[in-house]
Image (tube, helix red, strand yellow):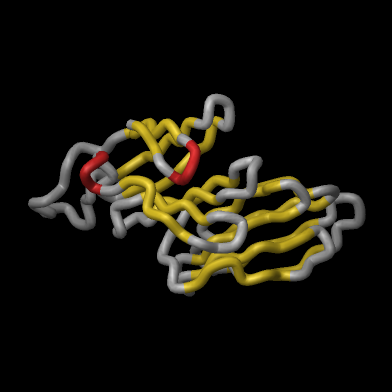
Length: 161
């Protein structure tokens, strides 16, 4: 759940819905659903893995398509407007700039098998990524141990591990 202005946004990834709630009045409405949600300024970004979308909603409730053909789940918004997304079975972390351009920041060679979530520490620009180790089933022979990977962000969309 994220607070945006005076509203709360709650996500239901099983139903693929987002619920926009005004706690002062109890008014609410359903919006396109989400696996992940992150607030940045007066906007909220929502990822929908099932539809392979990243959406942006402002506090005036307009929805802007930020990226499509993007299978990613949980993500984090940097104060400078960049979005960092875990691609889950894509085994990577993507960076989207404010214009929707994407760059793969890290992948399997950095230990990101089954990247499931990202968390951002904007000072000193560190991105933490959790992984499943690539395990898709109980007998996956390519699976590795699950990890917490620390990526130090640098300028120009690059990273240091």
